[in-house]
Image 1 (cartoon, one colour):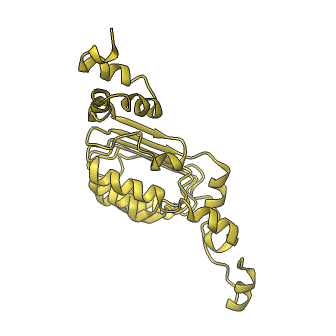
Image 2 (tube, one colour):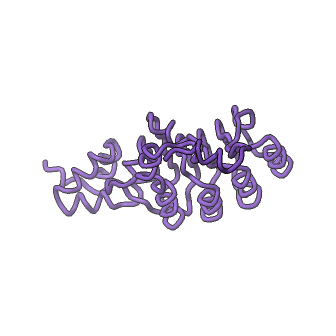
Image 3 (cartoon, one colour):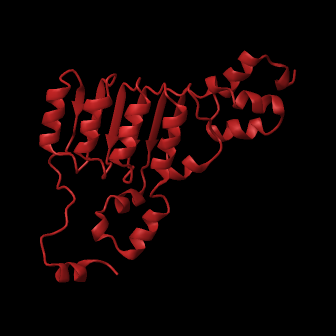
Length: 223
């Protein structure tokens, strides 16, 4: 019996056991399997282990997506987490290669995945408050938002949660150094039922330029 003789339900079940690359490779073999690959019901969950995976064409974004995670565990995460004014020219060149990848990808998610229920972002040093605020507005069914080591997340994201996260039940902002204790207190007061966790965030030193004269500062900045 050839694989193409299986009915749609069996093919979808078979595809569900494969990773993204294997699904794409199998879909290339014939139009029937490509059609199965493009079935939105095959893609309720997406997990990415590196930012480069976001540029591939081995997955589908659709209203069926419910759970999304982008967890980047790489030495480059440490570079991206350095304050911008402290980065050397070489470090800035590394960051420029993927600086907008997560924000651009999440913009597509906002347009195509209104039923998203859970998002996890770890090591996404360039994701911005504006991007997360849009995600909260465009995905009204979002119940869990877990952020870890996202250096550009600030109290503005907390304010966006209070304003737009009506369905949100769980919020983690772990190791997000630009989230303050005052911002967390305001959010807890505004959303007392929200399960809020901020491991080490408020205790970390936030980004800020040093209080030195401009001439001295220029000598400190990398060329």
